[in-house]
Image (tube, rainbow, N blue to C red; front, side):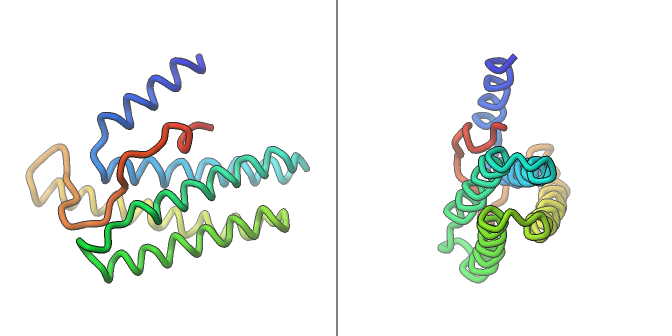
Length: 149
């Protein structure tokens, strides 16, 4: 089952457009953060650490994927949000604090909802079933490991 799941994720990543990859990253960060909260509640600190570390890596991947040459102001704003998320996740990991995870997840969920609206708008504007985030900072190809849990 693990190999099938990995193959599915690899196919999803290899066939996704940049904006879809960003959505996958946001989903992964939210999933790992929520899993970490569950581990914290069960006093499984190693599990919490592992999940938060993965969410932190995804936040860094999102930050590193920004391309300021296409939209400098937007990228600066996005980088600030990603940095906030990263800091909250690191603090949650250091202090074993579910409230800090919640802060990061709230921002991640808002970003996810905004991203979905952007994709839908692009689809509508282009009359295309497969949108393209032209001129928008989007994720580059990502590691399969950063999305697996």
